[in-house]
Length: 184
Image 1 (tube, rainbow, N blue to C red):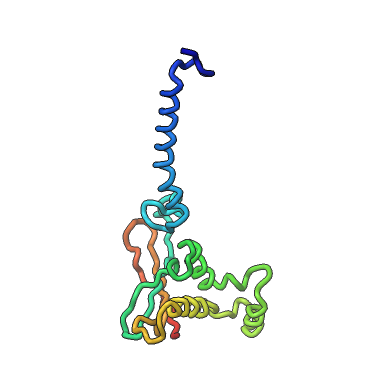
Image 2: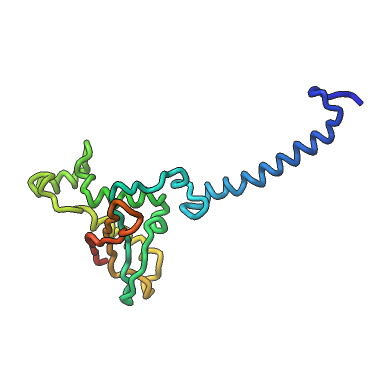
């Protein structure tokens, strides 16, 4: 038998081994690729949060919960990720920016925001969460647009609740701070 370029006398066995490893690689790689392309924030493949560090127990944290009030009076949870097809962190950063009036402090604010600043007599005189009602109304409208006009599952209002997680432990994470409600 002749030796191949690597000095191996069994090239057919090498080819079988190569094929075996190629199949194994595809078997491991394809589910990961599929998860990356199609799945958002579902365990165990949360692509956007996989490499994040654990929470810092030395600093408190404010977080928000979005809820909807149905025409029937029932309250449901409304995950913004399901409404906008965005990553979780991006949806909640919109809420944080709206609550903190960050859209008014950028270098080149929207003309409607400039008008609001001028009407209020300056940024310091703007009410807290000046544009939050528009964000909540948009999310409620998106939710209702996915349902028939006669559905009892349509929203009559959207409510955003702010909670504070106190620093120092992994407990005491549900101190209610404030709530905003918008009727649709």
